[in-house]
Image (cartoon, rainbow, N blue to C red; front, top):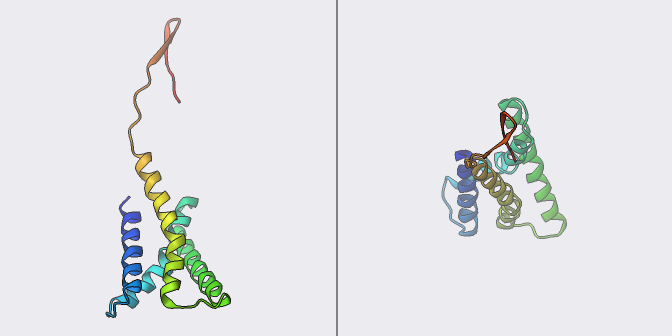
Length: 128
């Protein structure tokens, strides 16, 4: 659960630095980390690959594809600006992270115990 929240914080930080046009030495490193890791990792985690190494490799590959696709679309519609690029990639990254955070939060709630249904001499538990 901590990874998606940290990734969402990185998305928001990169988006804020780009929209605010803040010039500092950390901004390029955050942008590179964002573009080459964050967009594809939530998608790769939803696919549930067997190994964490495969999951990271596919996540980075999918991030590269998402970043390239976003840049190509913005170039084709003649709307290329670095700020609009960060906004476009963030726009399709934030929903994936929100779904991942919501499903991991909902999945950890404890279910109420079911009441046993007595049939003859044996007690069986009804499950949903």
